[in-house]
Image 1 (tube, protein in one colour):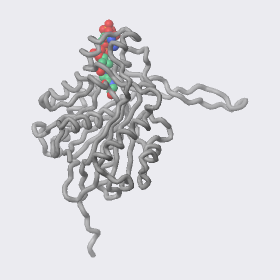
Image 2 (cartoon, helix red, strand yellow):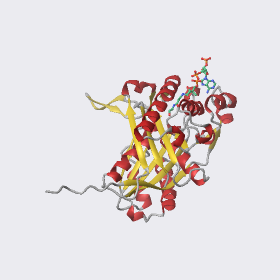
Image 3 (spheres, rainbow, N blue to C red):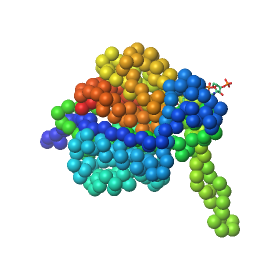
Image 4 (cartoon, rainbow, N blue to C red):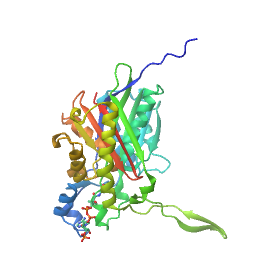
Length: 335
Ligand code: UT7
């Protein structure tokens, strides 16, 4: 008896979008708050300014705006979207913000949910969505990365507050049978090293009635061991990308662009050097936005696509890394 015929399903990249709040916080302005300088921040991180959400610009709003522009580039009818994944660690609603984005878009036929993996979130969400498409469950997916870390930064801690900014980015991807532009991926986590970067819950003992206690909710500001996170990134990111190049039989020479999570220019440079990828191929917009967590990769990609840097059929190696600790890589072809 014949089994079920297997059809190979691939992924095609159809659109990108992004959004950042208007409010700009320059290094100069941060130095009015903590003991730092424009010179120190630029030379140690490559960051000159970042965007900070003020009223209205929460993760739902930013994610919605990025998604809307990605949908219009893809030229999709809203009703045809099947899946929306929002990568975020700072949802407007802890129960999930993706369904609110779905409602604002009017994507009535989609299922929408949040996914949390800090700065690796977008990459993990992209991998997750691509598996739904390749498995044949869904045809059109929106993958959004949006974060508002400014609400969770300790603005008195100069070792961390200089790094982060707010923003959102999105990609529209589609199942297709003619080719597969999602070439390969790898992902890893190591909770043993999780204490290097946290946004922990802050529970205070309180009582409901006499002798019945509960822990009230809330969060402490971001806690980061910068040096350890730095060492982790410059070690693990080249390793996972190199492994992926070998697995997919694509050499680092063949890639057109390296789109890394935008954490620190020195991390980008070091990863590029270790993989022998020319600086011209390493995309960076750290100078303008700093580290926007789950948003950095789609924000960078959208900018490069709209500036005509990333073109149809360009091969992009991308890697996200951060809290968890978590890290991952994907090789894709644009289009
Ligand atoms: O998505 C992942 C998110 N996290 C990251 O990507 C973090 C990765 N790590 C980094 O990017 C870097 O470790 C930092 C940019 C955070 C720090 O750079 P560093 O070169 O590792 O500096 P450091 O922590 O070794 O500090 C060197 C000195 C210290 O002074 P002393 O002890 O040598 O006198 C710090 O107190 O620089 C001082 N320092 C600063 N000085 C001026 C630390 N932060 C600042 C600051 N301004 N903002």
